Image (tube, rainbow, N blue to C red; front, top):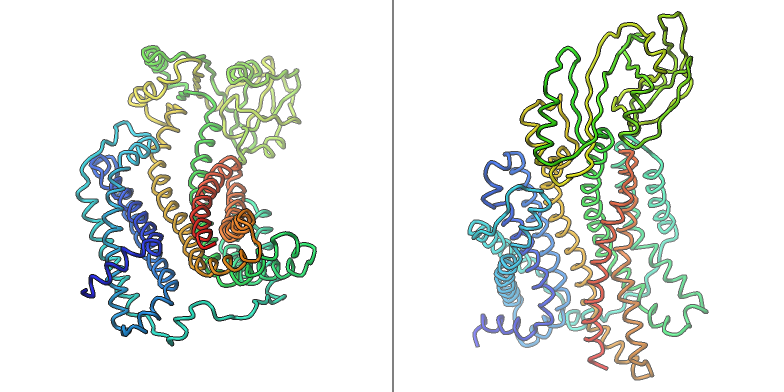
Length: 620
């Protein structure tokens, strides 16, 4: 049998050892390939996307590829670490270190080649689904039809074959030979029970708690100022959490006799501190990578929600048309005709905004009847203003209204009466982003000549919402944007422009999250042989199958979910800080993003637990 045949048989006959590494690599290739299918689609590589967006997609592809390199490198290193005993046996049979390196190189190239082919084939199978999702996310007018992605296939194949070649060469080159006895014993050598440093344990609590406190207290632009220090502090605290705090807590549980001796807790805690300490770097890396994925996708969704909410707040009516009073034309009739053609039914109101010299600036003064007409159109409460009374209205949801300045001014009427504002109300009835006054109709007539007048027309859709976008497109072609505003169409355009960023971010987040889950999978299976021996011995003294399953489930859940729970908490705090930056509630977005990731992780856990438990039970 040739050496190449030996390496090939080694892979084929040890499917269980290689399947995790193979599947993780194949999925990474598939994610990159599906992104390439999207990036090189004929419709998206033409005039639909400008050069800046195309450049952004290329950068995103580069990020995915670079991260894929480090992910595959880590996966390969973890995989080789579980094969120490195998290498020792091969050396006993006479294999040299050079031959072991050559075998590792050939095996990795074989796995890499088939993982690349498999990832491309899976990508082709799911490509239409991906294009459909992209089409809906981007809210495109034209459908992203399936095409033969020759360019995407070639780029993916060449890129990943080269990636696996470089990694195989690097890993085989740095593969160190150890003492034969160390290889044979593998991980059996005892390292003594891990101990936690009390100072570092308290420091972990202080760093994470302090970082959280600062993130949740500051508001506005201060959030940006403290962002980098908080991130550094929390990262250090997270590392200490896994290396010190987790070990300290496990030791405390062990010292609690009532808990330690209860049912199967002794078996659960017997080597948990060893595993937490040994896997601390992996858990730290998983927690940070998952936090980046949660925060990035949550930020993208949150920012889109913030911008859309801004449109809905600042433009309370479906359609708005503004023009100076001396420029009034027949545009309103044209708008009404287009809405009629598109079967869009609306309620309509018109008002002339009168601006008066108040103090050093000109301010809008509206009369009570005009305000109430628009309040009814919007569904807000009307107001009742008596003679001699004036109210200051601040536009709801804005923080830059000149309310304080208006409260300090007075309004002089032609009758000689001076009106002093006392009450502030919050409303969106008249969409004037700056604060303004409202007086009674009778006293409005005594204001004199305004310094400026503007005609404002508003339409609120009551029926035919499905035709609003089509109507808006027709109208916007007729009038400049500074005169006409269609709220739903503006949000539609926002979703189209922002959808690409969201879609790209989603791909990167998926790569990060899947990589994090795979890291946990590798670390769990690295201890499989040891677990088999341990539970085989315990079963001889009376451990039932039901108790075994319970212990394995709890042990796997602790190792699997500890870094994910830490990442979820980090992500929740980060998104809360983001909401305080924009003064916009992101609770719904945060719960949706974090909930979806948690659900995926739970499904992943049950799949891994099933196969892991099956492997351990096989030796009982």
